[in-house]
Length: 112
Length: 495
Image (cartoon, rainbow over all chains, first blue to last red):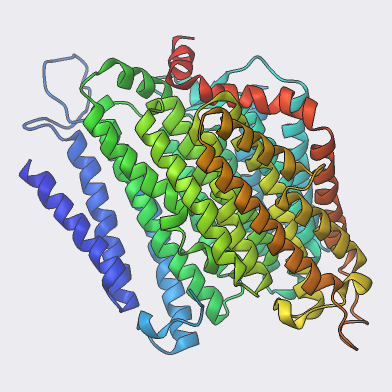
């Protein structure tokens, strides 16, 4: 249970950074932390204490396996996270070119 | 028919990667190929509507059967969504042929548009909750990139805002999926519905997951407490992309996914229904109030999108057959006329270089086609008979009265009146106002832009006039799939 609470704390750290930090790069890092907390959560869902890697070897025994499906899911989710992060960083570069700053408080040419 | 289902995702995905290679061989090859792809997809969608297979049709990827493999589902609701998505995208692509001449890197634009289309079709067809998330992210990433396509300061800023909120929404949805998987040990929606109906102790978890999903999909569909990104992101994109975003993206990855999961997997209960109804009512009202003070053509339209999405959510959240039917009918109508309005705004900007309402005028004479098509769209969104928007709003209001919710019904009528006023303002300031010596020698929009706008305007009229057979044949069966709720998915699982 404690590990789930720590994972939620990690998620909230990233969430806080993504919303409250003024520096764009820190926002991107916050996004990364949040993404990793979500991935970790999915892995924890499939984790069984004392279980082995889910490889079937000929005869079926009474070994406890960890759930392999969340591991497959987070591979997809990591790739998606990579794509989003890359695009985010690219936008940060463009924003720096246009506004000359990474401070979100000074990047407000749009109303509302 | 099975193979036809795969085409909806495979063809645009293939096109997205083949376009840069094959498109170079011909003059205007990118344009021709994209129009061919979207036209053939619309033809497939129309074929499904006119020769309906035995619904529900379940396609198992790689022949892995339902609880194990990824499954896709074609039922009246997804067939209905397919036709909306593909036909609107076809018109948008035709429009882009001329409009996107202003930008460099047209092939990149088409690549991203095709990716977005593949994602939208995937979201509509998927019956596997993680698969749905993946397609949703494809749509989201391509729309972040497309909003920033012009790479001007405002566009990049809007895109960044959209991206921050969009990725928070995606994270919430993924956590929700994680909790559901922890509870039910399955990702297949049919199996999940079955598992959720069997375990009685799940209600607290289900409330938590519902909260996560309402936040996540609410952000994606810009319901009111979560709407902050929309009025920046939608106007900043190139006009055809604004049309796609307002017309299709917020509906497919927001409303459709929300309705599918809440009705068919969770089974709607009175608490979520009440909450969604409240969110819809607030969106309806706040959107239109914020729209009143706007003088930027596209920004005004974006605020109206929030308000019209409110109507759709109000209708669907009622949960009565008539309410759901009204909601999804309005979803279709809104995607037709709001896309058309954004295309109109785009062609006004293309011709005059401004989208400030106070600076334009006289365009009724110099741009007759843009003018009449936008009049049709304005009357549709304002709910003037016999245009399509009137019927869907009428159905929603009747359904609200029937369900004994006179407050929401009165709100819907009031919002309809304010919408009418707001669009009369657009018509007056952009097209009918006479200013001396201004915009008299402006050229009408180029031919493909005109054609696409006329096509959508005709669609508005046709849906409005042939409302009755359309409503009975297409909308009612689609509404029935949502109303049947969780039992419907359990029935599919049973075969």
